[in-house]
Image (cartoon, rainbow, N blue to C red):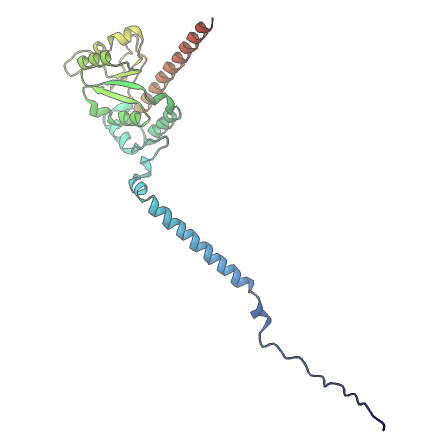
Length: 244
């Protein structure tokens, strides 16, 4: 019996087509970029909120005017200070906020000289130098204000001062030099006269004299620098003697 094998070729059936488009099987670059941009903006906003919450007390304490800001830990309204100085006739009424700000920055560059320095300020009208005393205190100096020659002499007996600032006359008519006679005679501590009349001569033994608040800061810085240099030289001399 004869057997036949018949081979039947399978019909060419195309594979099923995918119902999803190629774009749906992967991220669209534009979508990815947009998502990252939104996430970045959200993160920045979150950081700003956190910082604002954390530092809110410090931000509230910032001065309202940029004219009040200065480096070196000094906060003062330079415009008001200049107006006060000019109304008092200091510097011939030509002092500007910029002059004062520059003087504070120069003094602040030598802040270490002010740190812990003892200053005796003699003036029977202390309200006229409140800005200057405030700046020096913020720079780190300890400023003791007295009103009379008698108070000045008593203060000098009780403490060793690095610097004395004085006016030139008292309301009772006595000369200011009576309160600083010993310092003028011995040259220690240096005496700076902060006066209203630029024509007055510098008393013998005085370190300097000025009518301007910016020049006063320059004189104070110079006097404290001289003190520091002399103290360093004295210490080196003692060390050299000890080694011999």
